[in-house]
Length: 571
View (tube, rainbow, N blue to C red):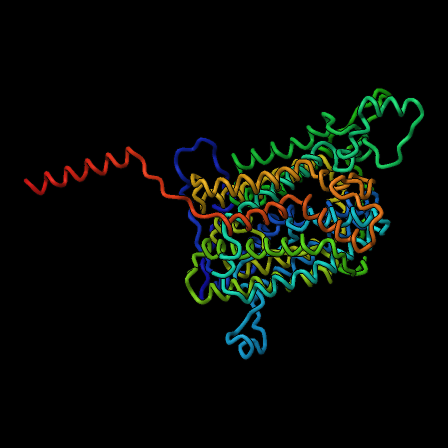
């Protein structure tokens, strides 16, 4: 079959602010099975890779830099490389769609692994808060951070069997189990939690943000009297610089990323807008690289050094670092809820891909894609843990890439997987990423994370009757609890370095089994989207529908229309 030419000019043509006429350039549409040329596939795949790389490297970077231990640069670099390679492999599996041998004899229909459409996969944000809290709790109990990470991976592998079970259910049953009002609450609360974390990065870093209490006047007075605190300290570092959290210099560097995002949205071509997050991040990195901090002594301190790049391996792969798989009981309930969330997200993402790919959502192929995509989600999460990486799930931002480029060919998806694996194998890329100052990463992540919140709001606005009293009540109470514990989790969560001190259940002298139960309850109650999601599910089940309201004005209008109809009949 002859292939059509692609208008690369339209792909690279900049947009003009305040322009009143649309661009006359037109792009051909390429369907999911169209055999596009290799060069075009590589270009399209690179756009998908760039669109997702900023998001997929963030969860491992956060966990390894701020939760497991910020001095362990080599581990951070390995985690980033492993996430890139794992996401590339999982993307290829999800796009390929493999039939499961013997499934027809067991289930009465052929079951698949993979969606068979251009649906890419990457490290999931949904599991980030649970991994952070779980590892911190285990560290407080004296468990080594890397062992704790292995326990979270093992627990995740067990819990993802829930999604594997759900994958054999019809899509209608999934929607009944997890209706839009519940999923919108969940997505909004995930966005709220992550946006707060992004703000900590922007001011200089998560650790120094959480240690800013040391700047209190009474604490400083105690330090002046000879009292000392061990690490971590309240000062944030970037390259050779060390400043307090929220320093103007750090905020300014992060703000350069946001400025770049606005400029790209104003003037950027289709290609640039698809890659806006990574381009803005690299611009902020460049600004930090050419900037210096002038001290009172006349020294010029760099915000970016090449130390991390030098120590990064030129070539790396999976299992260069390993973590002993284990099991952590207190994380089970939150992880099960997380897999419920990703199940619904995957159904929504695949439906969105069908929409932008101009495919029929009422077809048998659509049902097969939903089933195969969910099975792939679960299998790939198991593989991710075996690959020493956090759980993978479908990425929704790539739907925008398909809509803008008009290319839904699976070849572009395979190329995306190739680029991700290539980026992960070249370890110096991870070295560059770990040398980016936290404040610059914050400028990127606060935008990226808040887009999750916006997605939840968009889902609520498009699927719910927001004027309904019942809807308002469910949203109000669920978000009240979820946002409340997100903004201030220490009603149920222990302060850093103060195990079993949360007053709701101290349990310092409890048995190990009771401590495990207490830790599980603490994770559940202090993770906003867990308590918010369960609240929304319960309220949606027990609350009656709204009582119809009859208004006097409507009655008068009806009576008037009746009188007019009688007059017409008499005439």
